[in-house]
Image 1 (cartoon, helix red, strand yellow):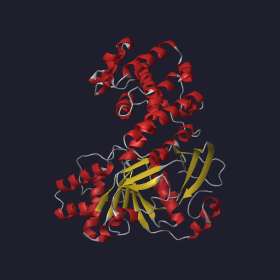
Image 2 (cartoon, one colour):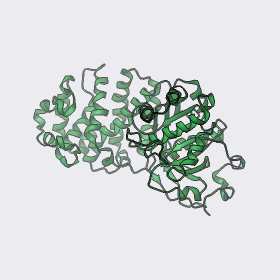
Image 3 (tube, helix red, strand yellow):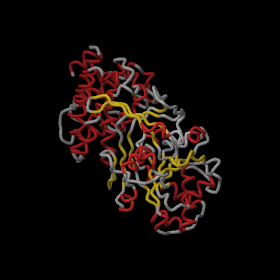
Image 4 (cartoon, rainbow, N blue to C red):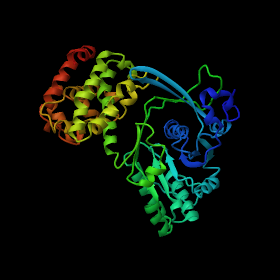
Length: 474
């Protein structure tokens, strides 16, 4: 049996009967993108809010790229299965549900007129995007093409159509929520939209409307979504089924009451919220999740662990990550002024996420652009740490030293080829000279008390003792 709306009543074990019998909900949300992150997070949150009665809205999804096809979505009437599998409270958990909130799926390349007609619908006041980091780029574009080639071009054209039909009225207001993984994603998107509008000599009144009636909100999303899966032992077939971890986070930055009121699907979970600033949330994620990954990857690769879950099966690595997070990263974030409870909410789920046996997260992938990640994720932690400590952090310094040792002994892993000679000629006995090189680090790392001696000691161990023995002793 194929998944579609006609067959939905026959597979009601996956959808509650009350939800099944309700009429199609009014379209209130436009999604730019058809990818798995959008389907596993924003669409999922809207589905949950619809079922709980805190939101009443459907989605029109836009395929905005040249590649791919919307045919599978059309055949399934926009229905798809979301399977979650992972560890929660140290126990394996799996769930499976059918997402029913997609009202329509359109291809921007063949249905641009229809999409512009949706812009005139005053009920569709929420626009969510995930066009990858390459989607929010400042490029030359023709706003009057059908469609414009870039995502910012498409968005500007869509918003202009809305303004032309509804004018500067309360009914014309719109909320734009980019979920692309770049800092200040909405700020950057708004800048490009305004530049395109100005460059095409669109009316001043439209540009003023962008400033007063369109709410560009920075967002931060976090959910591991491995991608498409084949349903096992299911009573129906689903060509769009996807998998995700149980954990998810969606933080939206806004101070406006209108945004709070309209985004009623946010806040139904402790992991979705609207805040005046999401800077601290971004900082927590960057230092705890990304920082822990970065500071463990070298040791894991030296131990020839392929997947993150492999390392977490080793009690020594689990202990190392726990100590790293709770004894060094969390206190450093608190020293920076981030609230203890905010850090706790995020950090207590980390080990469960890393242990997830259903997700094959490769250390090699985490180690891509390793040097840049060390500079952006780890070095700022040192300034936080040394604001209240005078001794080098044991676990951060070991993770850093393991990175140096890995790059020195596996020079082919260094993606920044301009630094190849520097690492090739690295003398562990003269580490001070290497750490003080601003060309390598962008700053002088010798300013941190006892940092160089700690790194030198770890490097000497890595040269003489197996990584397994070192991890046992840490």
